[in-house]
Length: 484
Image 1 (tube, rainbow, N blue to C red):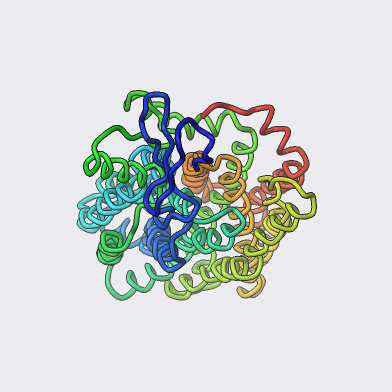
Image 2 (tube, one colour):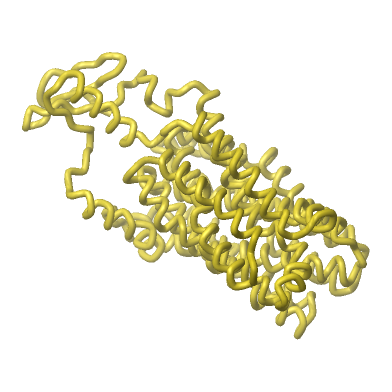
């Protein structure tokens, strides 16, 4: 915001705060009480925005797994094998990760709302040709493209929440939003199982087309632009039309458009590969997502084959991690803000991003413990309720780690929060999409005990990360600081 110390008289009205630059251009910025500043919006408007983008963030991951109960039916209908049909999940999830590399920086150039509406409209429309797929190649190709456009909610949701909420208020809201990327794959097989069993696999995509269209319509009606530079650009144009003269947005980047766009497109990868903190936390999240999709795509074989469950019963098993998600969001995630504010007050300094990390240690313990639990109870055919209970703690650990990591990214990169989150999301989704291809041969060769334990040991290796970054993260960020 303008602080009144620049050249020229400082003026404030309900609509405009400006100073003048060396070229006598009035500089437009928000006032402290500005109603158009997203952080000053009424709570109802903020939560409406969060609700719409959270639904987008649920629906695209929902689409990633919703057809999995129908894999055998799809293979039979399209005259192929189950393993080939799994490629439709891999393609979708990989492009779900690639999308944010492009869509996040675009939102930092054109604003959030346009990207949401354009991309999710395309995502909704693409469900129609997917439902009509004549062969498996067409199915995989269209699914991959739809994954790209469906990633918009994941790409820009964190940035949108950062636009509207102060750091001290953010984690609780962010926790409910982040249910989407994890709850979607969890609810997908349950809903898909019911549709496949009572209708057919094609109706999975007709159902997605309907609910995605409804969500898109809600977006056109109620979603508001939250990116401050985009709002100020609109304000600038109005003042130039009504008052004439020259205006300039505070901190405006005057470089040529294509130069700015090219740099913004490179930003997520620059963050990923030059920031050790982002890279290591992204690897950790990638292992978690790879584990999740490896388990989900094998639930049919585990609970259907070993425990004799029907398709609908297998779908209900996915509620195990879902219960863990809700427990974490309800009881643990709100404490991220509490601890953040407590540590800031205790040490009497500027809040540090590292103050977001203490609760990640809960997930660091629960993830490997729950995976070992699941692995060996399934291996020895213990009563089905016991491995399901293990997945509750797996879900709890996932949400805890994902929330602390995402809040850490936002606090560390602030203005470029969407690009930082995209940097983590691309790695997470690509690795998370590829690993499940190798899971079935692994489980066949060494069994579920040692097979799932491979994932547990890998997560155990990364579990010290929150403690390490809590103590040394600030120094690392300073040592690897880059100009974005």
